Length: 141
Image 1 (cartoon, one colour):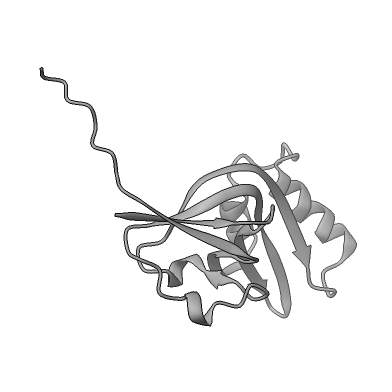
Image 2: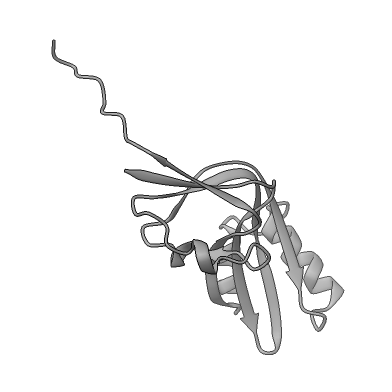
């Protein structure tokens, strides 16, 4: 058996990373318009699940993000990051600068930002569906 956890509201699956440097912080990631979480184990968090807080997907035994659609990248900065640095970091994150060829995580680390966490969440009202895996069609007759 497999289980699919489906958010009933758009934008309820989020992949988030947090970076810190001295007393400054960047929160960034992707908000997925549609998607689901898959797990081979029956979810047991139902009675304690709070739709307003959600649950970290890594806390769902066997849980992983399934297919996702229409992701929107977002980035937020602590107030003590200068506007110029925010603009440069935003350009790196969104991939609009030609100054760096690596992905934003590697560039942030090269710029002395430390990755503190990288987690995925699902929140809001959810539906849990159980389904049996359909065996692959036989190649032999």
